Image (cartoon, rainbow, N blue to C red; front, top):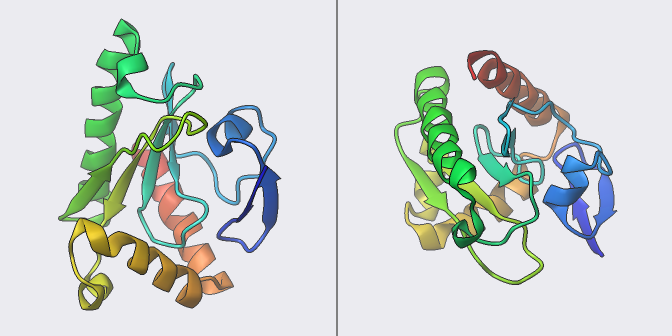
Length: 160
């Protein structure tokens, strides 16, 4: 089991975050942005960064190597659509897309990490993302930012 603290400050214990979300075993602090037959699109609910989106498979798989033919086609469509609404709705110019196959217990998901102006002081490369996430958790874990992220999530949902 893993303990997580979501962006609303609630601590939750889970085995696999994505599976727990799919089975409604974990309370999401914000609404799901979008859903297709095989994937879900959500604002990351652990890190208080506006427009930090996650695409997760509904099936508990570990890699793009596990995709069936339907998932292969659908994944690129949801990835492109997600990036498009980030640009159109939030005016996010730069995104880093991350997919890590770190263990057999990890559920397939992709980060669409948005680059905001406030992040520049931490660096603008892949290796700076963890530091930025930590900074966001330490400095943006309050009601004001939570409400702003929820509002942004709803805007993205309406466009998805």
